[in-house]
Length: 296
View 1 (cartoon, rainbow, N blue to C red):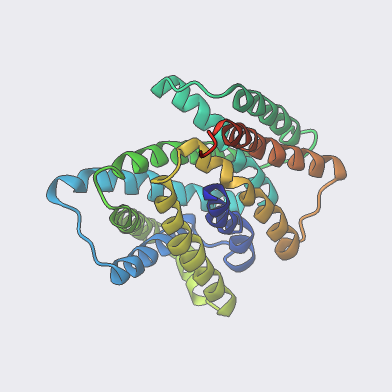
View 2 (tube, rainbow, N blue to C red):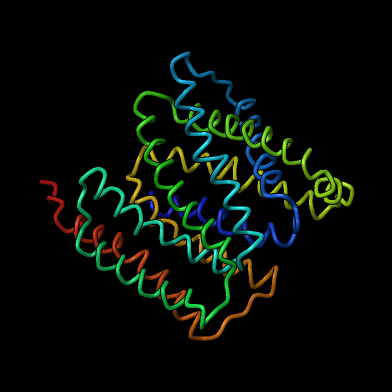
């Protein structure tokens, strides 16, 4: 059941790329990150006021820097430089990196089926991202790889904090702290490049407002609320396998909003990556259900 719930925020996150390209083209990634994080954090603070203790501020700001400020900036760089479907499909490589990270750092060996699926994901990604098959912006690809590491490190930090801090406070204040960081950096960037900010704000229209409401409300307030809540009830690796909804949303939104169309071979590779990302958790869950003792 938790895996199904994890698909809800993953679906909304998968729409980020196409929604940004369609409703907020040419907006600075730093400004988009600040507008996504800070309002959502303040909304959650108004719903349920919380305040970290004196000794908790350092880790909250560290989490806000990694999980929000850096990650949000990278996500919008991806959204503005890569096709929506490619961004969504590429992000399902997170389980592979998560398994490697937990194996190397925490000595948690993955199941054989997870390892085999990870190898399969890498092989299919290699074919899909092959320059002979599709031309991709290298800046967007670098942003994608860095964003994946932010997810893994930030998720591990969030899960660790869950043992001594309420999940709502973690969620609220990482958004606020990350939003403050992005607001400061965005302001400095705006002072250095004022024309860029004047251009997008002077042409603000209803389509921009709808895009911001979608990103702030559904992608962030709702999506991150479920994300932090679920991380207290399942492992980081299991949560990342629920991300199957991310590429499905990315492919669908890219087709509907941006008219992105790929060859049958490319769609086959995308489908194979999606199946492999879900396969390990499905098999492990089936095995665990079979070994549960029957009630007398």
